[in-house]
Image (cartoon, rainbow, N blue to C red):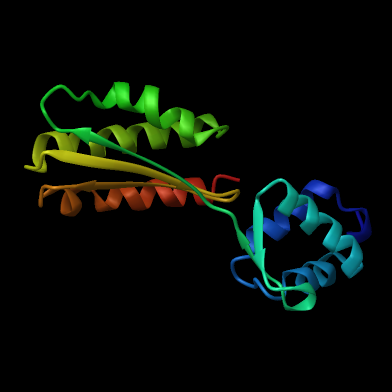
Amino acid sequence: MSPRNQSDTTVSEFILRHVESCPKEIVTFTANHFGITRQATLKHVRTLVESEKLGFSGTTRNRIYSLKKESWYKFFSLDGKLHEDQVWSQEIRPQLGMLPDNVLKIWSYGFTEMLNNAIDHSEGSVVVVSVIKNAVWQEGLFTTTGSEFSRKSNALLVLMRKTTLYWN
């Protein structure tokens, strides 16, 4: 398939995957990669902006594009009544949207283990759970008033982010 016959999805996915590394030059970079015009590339960029996957600042050729991020967070009391499986299924899973089963399994395992660590080991009274996402990646963050949690859960956070980032 020649570059000019690339599907709209392929061009849009390329833009989303590369905009963070070249936010000022994404239009030219994409046009050159696919051998299409700037106008054709701008059509894809406009669609991504309209669908709120991309944001921008500046005007015309001085535009800087970026992935639009969504954030969600909630405070949970570590009062002995918190159950990680219920928080996962009722609060976190709905935030993630459509992901392949293998990625969801890693998220489920990583999230429930980290929340369990916060419940059992943080020595704190509150945990804040956040999900930050954009069109390319999703990230889970945990903050607690206790001191032991961060040290014990860092590796799982890294695994969850890398798994989501590279699932496609």
